Length: 564
Image (cartoon, rainbow, N blue to C red; front, side, top):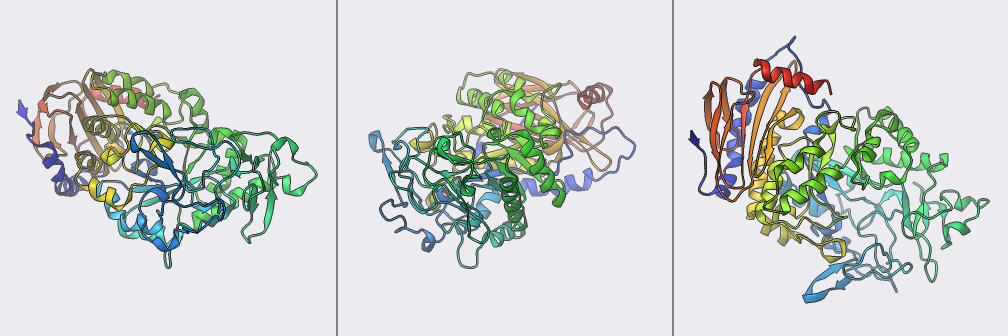
């Protein structure tokens, strides 16, 4: 037995970058071996499946340019630093707090060093310049109320063509930012988009500027709710034609997706943002808009940008329901894996939980999704309570997230357990800031995340390979990821231990004879029929074999997975 227990896993994680760089050079030389004519084993051919995404809520990340903070904006309804007071000195905020494009660029190295290859940005388009005076007033810990809030989050668009003034700086437009991220840091940009709604549009004591209004690319008013409830909108009024005449979410305008003018407006606007550098879309509230809209939307986007990747937020824990969006007839839009999120929170928040509880959401065989390997996987985000786990719970979650199927997504701050356990108006969206970035650099959660995320970054089998589970039980998980095409042959064996003690693993099932290398430590082993190792407490090992599949038991199981 080889004992790979490390007395200081945090220190080992800090060495991961150097190790991975060496491994990458070795692996790239080996996996280029041509195997034309051999059986293919692949989870997905989708190029974007190779990415790992860091989600930034721009206003709450880092204030890189104080000159664009608009601190005096809003008049009687100010927009900057609107604090909600909670018990025990706790606070949340519903005003702008200064984060901007420069704050992202200034910390792009911090993001890419962790192994992320894409940044998902909250919406960048123009939002109203005042706090909303209608609706019910929001309070600390409250939900489903918009009164007193601002558009700091970006989801209240009044002009889908115009960038909001809080984000850019001199010589740093959205286009310049995306170019800088891509060219200097190897980071793609995922743009958050909305087609379901515009701003809060009625229930105001007096009609406020931009609320309920929509402007075109030339700044001309094309729609106005005029502070009227939906049922009072006039079908004969051209300014009301953009809206449905029934409510949907709170006081938000309900865009009429049936109107060809609305479809053209939205599709052309989002085509413009692709031209400005968006590499993919995350679609907000996708389930509130019918499938036929998304089919036209995606067809027209991909007619000009073939293969453009999109994933949607269908906030629902029913896999059959959210899978409908992934079907070709509905636009072939991938989705955030909400059933997976629910399972991960349960497993990684509870120390005595069972890895077996993660089995069902994967849908590796016979599931409802067009392709489960293309789902965006996550354990929390800005719209739900942050995961309330220990440091070790976050470490275990990342070890799973970056080795199992799907495209991993991590919300800003989770690399240090920021505001863990808090919901939206309890601190979930609190300002992270440059001080948060500096604190996170030395945090053990981030150090372990960086180690495993960089392994995924340099291991194609973890990105697009089939997943074959050997055992998910108790505190241990054992599974393979296998990728074999005409240009690559790679098998990764993943060993996860989420217990507080080191654990012995012996794996004989489907083992391929040959040389294997453990990706985090760099250790190698010539294996004949089984692997016996000890995995550290809350540890992960990824054993990589760069050769084609020859064993019949493994080949048979993989062939069956390919048929699903």
